[in-house]
View: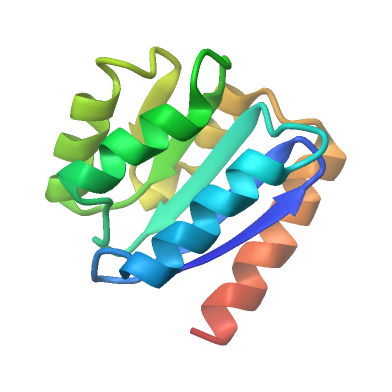
Length: 128
C-alpha cells in the first residue's frame, strides 16, 4: 500500500492484498496528521481492501469530517467493501478502472489536480 497527499487529495494505492498492520497504521497516521486535512480521497486498488477492523479504524480516523471518496477497481470484492463503508461514509463511490475520469468528476477535481493525480498513478503503475 502507498499513500500520498496532493493538496486536498489523499491518493492511495493498494495491490492485490489487504494492507498490513504497519501499512495501515502509516496510512491512518497520514490521515490524522495531514494539514490541511484532506477532503478528497482517491483510492486505486487491484483487489486489496481494508479488513473489517481496518474499516472501523478508518471511520474513527475520519470522524465527523466530510470526505468525498472515489475507489477505482475492477475487483467485485472491493465494490462490496465500498458499499459497506457507504453506511458511514455517505460520499464514497466505486468506479471501474475504465472510468477514472468519472471518478475525478465525482471528486470535483480541478484540471491541475487531475493532472497531478494522473502523474502519480502512472509513477506507481510503472514501479509497483
